[in-house]
Length: 308
Image (cartoon, rainbow, N blue to C red; front, side):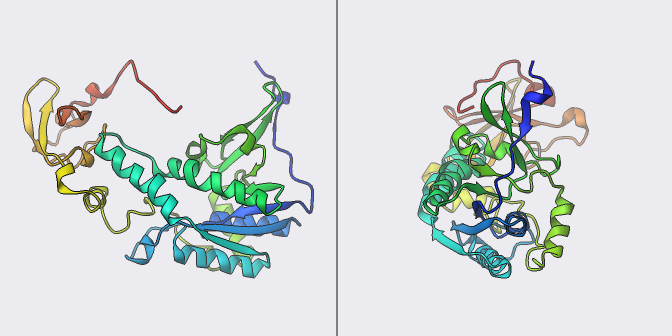
């Protein structure tokens, strides 16, 4: 077992180092950039314009990477007096994230588009861009931390200090070589500290901005409605809903509207007691069957994993 002395937080960059900050337009990345500037680093802000969904509907939740969000990021850069650049990656985002999101649901799986976005679009492009700008490091506003493990001779991704905001699980696809060049300036902060710091730094346009809590490109609609708007009706196949004991429970209009573990929205008349509650236990894509059962049927002793 490694002793505590063999694991340490990643050392702070030397003063004056050039740090390119990926800015989504939210309070977290804005504070990360402004705080680094205040600490004396050579900061450059960059943003990827990924979609315009937020401009089409009213949304009580926050968004990221939309046109209006980029406007917020630009105002932060102007306030803090550092350069800011934007590049359009809508087509890459459409192909790598949105199309994958739809395909996964149609195949009976439940995707995490934020993980896919970080892997296929954001970090790959942002790191290359940062290095092209002569950066020593790329920084983001994620609630995560990086530590140096001397025993294993590598950098490791760790949870953010705020357990309610930890985002390390979004970043599990990051390569060790990229971790060595990445900073998470707010990873040791609590969320309320970040908002307080935003006000102290004069970032009033983002200090109270709501957190992004929904899939950024699914605005004003359910996942079901979004998917159905993007595929021909021939791909939305109806099928049966069966109980694990073999009893027919009803019919469905497509596997895309279900996820394993789901309890609500099954369209089945069940009693309200917890003993009678039904959950989605399995999605059989070969026979287009939704299998439901009691909560105990969800527990397994084996799992098949990929892309760990």
